[in-house]
Image (cartoon, rainbow over all chains, first blue to last red):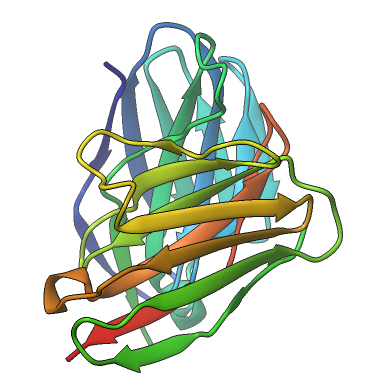
Length: 112
Length: 114
């Protein structure tokens, strides 16, 4: 069974204080790893897709990296508007039905 | 990215009534859509996979007679919560995807059953 574990559960940052979120996964063949941002009371917003170890993607203050066992989401010089819950999900190669397995998320709070 | 809408965004109903939630993909055709529910401070739990023109596939533990799914066109899937009870109160979210690529999520529907 696919497993996705995110840490820490919650992260409090001062504005400008860079940090990283971790997503560890166990899957029988990774087809893709996805990062989403979710604001309270809203649906998840797509951020990144990573397909192979060594791949990196960036968007504004966010950078996602991937190894064979985990992915990191780096937040550089965060601002209060970066406060959200960040979700990680994986899609297995054996999956013919495109179902994602989600982690529990990391809730990030950035104080001004 | 692709745009997915949901309607209504909020609904309050009395116990025993049925509620229909619509999910639309606005700028692409989706042969597959997914329905999730999310309890406070928890992650998304997949309820079912909605397939255009065929029966939905439900996850273990999800009552198919209670959560009716219809995917009548390539842009519309509906979830009907039948005979809703307070324990069905939750945040329901749909998504549509590009196969092995990213899924795009709707804004969610907050259901409150009194």
